[in-house]
Length: 223
Ligand code: 6PG
Image 1 (tube, rainbow, N blue to C red):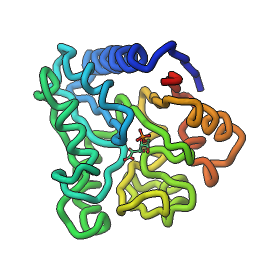
Image 2 (cartoon, protein in one colour):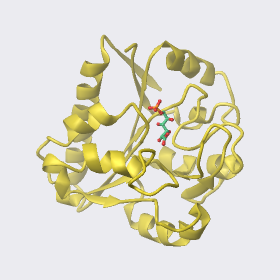
Image 3 (spheres, rainbow, N blue to C red):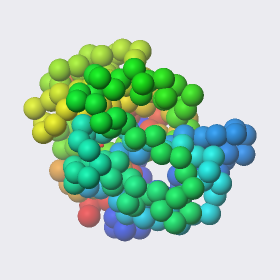
Image 4 (spheres, rainbow, N blue to C red):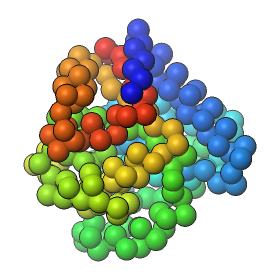
């Protein structure tokens, strides 16, 4: 794992967007279509606001989430809504988006169709992840009902329910996240920095982010 520390988070967000743009451009130079997975939550919007203005061949970029809350896109909890508002605009409006929320009653109901739609986009070209102070990443939460499947299974997508998540989720599995050609984790604040340090000493069952740290670049700013 590489750790990059930034003096302030605004500079960090712009820098991460530039790095991801460069990686997408590089991937596009050798592949017809490339894939980008991004997190939801409260941290990444400024990265999306910067990345969407980059002039690259977005029509050949497939965007998806690392994980989704099982809520319709008109919910403020929807990660898809965040991506549509902040990333799929400006130049990036030309990108293709693969939403994970299908409108089915449960993530299990939507799973087969989602896995078929996902298969052509793997391995991911670029993956950006967030992390919670409880050391979850994507929707792979400590204590979650299908933690073992998400950490050790071969399935690319795993429905997930956890005490730390108010609604059912669907998440890319650790296998898919680890297979990404480029992997970044963005965190801010002292609490998450301390959690990252702790995670490096723990097993993925206790600290799921530990499953994806090897080979990742972690970007941190205090605030
Ligand atoms: C989600 C995310 C999740 C997120 C972390 C950090 O849907 O919640 O994809 O994995 O990255 O929970 O969230 P914050 O950026 O809000 O702290």
